[in-house]
Amino acid sequence: MGIKLQQSLNVSPLYLLSDSQRIAYCLSYLSMSHPNQPEYFTISSVCPHDGSTTVVGIFKDMDAVSYRLKRMYTTCGDEYRIECFHLSFADDEAKAYNEQLVSRRKYQREEEVKDRLYSAFKKDSKEPVDEVAG
Image 1 (cartoon, rainbow, N blue to C red):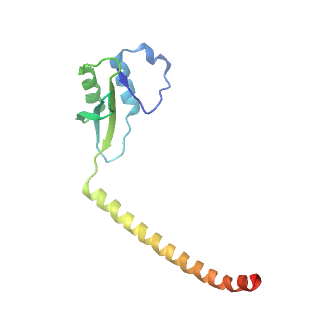
Image 2: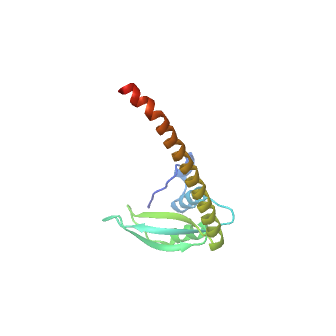
Image 3: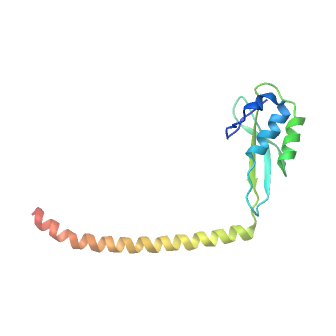
């Protein structure tokens, strides 16, 4: 069963485990948590011919992912992609959006000030440079 992992494992006796134990270990190693955001996991099968993916399922936790992988009929060379998604809520997204707008406006104001100062500096320094050149 070929499951591609994005992180390397630093455990030497991993080869002693069965396939299902290795899967469970790898999944627990790869799981990450974000506070106040529910996590959902997907399993996607990867087509060996064109690389397209098909979502096999959406799961609430890593245990469910592990059990589904154990249930699946796999052959040598099969590739599956396991991804973690964080569920966000409208309130959180609205708050982040407003913070981003404020940050952008602040940046635009700072850039306008920099442009005006640069233009004034360029105008002041242009006259002596022309005199020296001419």
